[in-house]
Length: 40
Image (tube, rainbow, N blue to C red):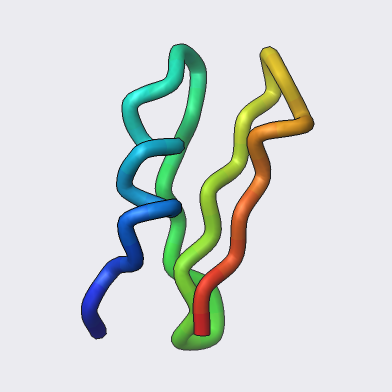
């Protein structure tokens, strides 16, 4: 799966974690929950 640019840019934020669940790509950030993203 290609990762969208919006997800890639969130990956560089402090405290963010990229997770694959059920075939979807999620970006989770506990420090700033505003930076959540989902693809797929």
